[in-house]
Image: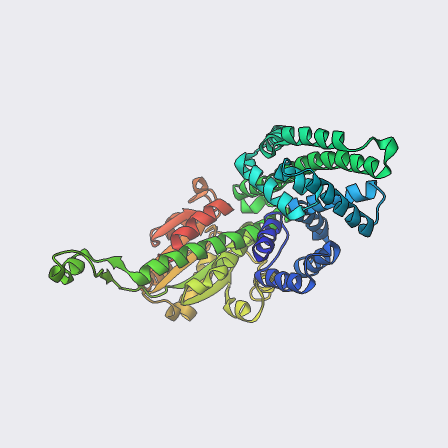
Length: 469
């Protein structure tokens, strides 16, 4: 169940609901404590641990119904519906099932497993058989809602519903006439209702699979659409979705880097040493040797322009790098408009959202002044140049619009002489660089890499090249 809860948390993130790793662990612990038998208590446990904002409640309720109304729940509800339609209490229904089992035993071994499991109300075995048939017809390949009827019919054929209908008619004929036996009448009614219930189970299960796929496809489509949209034109809803997308992409990159580092710890296969050390074995490589050179974690220094035109881009860049900071030995971040200020302590002492809000709201520097890259660079060179060494990657994010002030590009030259790499990310279209008050061409000559970074997809491609190999 833990895997299902993690998958459900991912599904909610895909649909714009903020669920942290800690909250997912709380949900796992709550589910273990509450259990899964009482659906309402289980739902309440997940809602209380995973949902923080009232506006996310409708999304949670919808996704919970789609995800946790699984095959087992559908079969259980179908059985309860049959009992209610026959106006029986749980005890009466259980006694009636025992009568059915006795009758089936008297009929010998002619019945199929499906018929027996269905009539004996064996939910577990019925679930296993339907799931196996779904795998056989590759139900997970259903792509459109229009295909639901086709897959429902295919699932019915795979289960053997044609044979089941014949078996039910045969059982019906073996019972005494209804007018002679009330118990016989109830059993005939039960057979009919069970057949209808199975048909309903199949159709609801196929529909549920389609709904889950549509939810994931819709979330993926929304992310693709917003991924190509300029940071500057994002709505508040899109900003919320982007915050979650940045976290997901950062997690994906951390997983990639973890694999790279496992390989790096083992080292590259050293064929010369392997052959040399296996001469005593006639050249057969029983003992393998690897080059075990290990790379140190790099350092990162970020300078983010937080003027109005690029503030969204800076927010996502800061969030991205701090989500990845465990990959680096040290991360220091600065924000600037006309003056520059360090925001590294904010991320050490506060959670990510509070730190970002404080960094971009004017608590550190005046964010409402006119941009002056030259002044900010000069202040950084005078006060923080000692933070840069040959292991440091310096990343500058800004549009280079300097309002015709002195550019002080010599500062970038000094930074580049000390750093391992100097990278500039510009949220403006490349075609506008160098026009008007843009100093991009003057600054670019001192950079190792200059990239356009106007949207999430571009930011992701840039960061993918920055993470340590």
